[in-house]
Length: 213
Image (cartoon, rainbow, N blue to C red; front, top):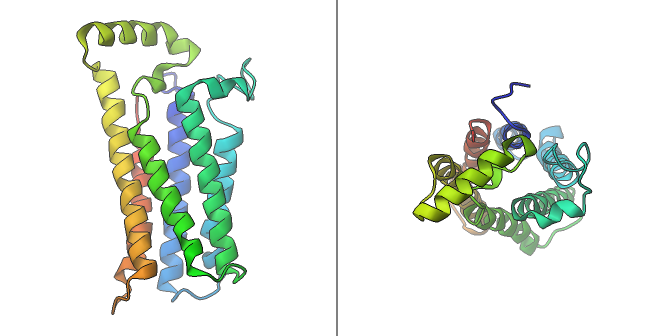
């Protein structure tokens, strides 16, 4: 692993690859007319796997490879946000899987996907700009930047970059929520809206893969 990238950056990249596959599988299923093929069930399962990994294993300097226990990691606001977002994604994937298997037939269940997407967007907007430089190898740099930022009352260049990147990701999450809602509840003559949220998922994946601190 290149030393220029910390584990948090690599975590974003891995999540981005998952979003690429999720978006691609959803688009493939749309191209197949929404039939009950393997692609129909593939992306909800991948969302569950992605959420499960994010909820249980995150930030290698913490649990499970670090000295800090899983419960102690929750004292870090940005880690807590990661855990909650991952749990929400896992739950949304489960609900979508049950919907596609016709176990949950009420259309209201589609609001879980919409709500989780919007909720993750809100978390990204509230994500602390200094979170990415909190690993032990970057702690001295982090403390210096926090002192500099508090003195100048402005974000450092690194913090500004982190903030903007998370704001762009939040915008993609809101677009996923909006397009998912319109595809489910608006009676359109064409199905273009059903293709919209997977495209935004691919764009979100791209932002995550390109994420740098």
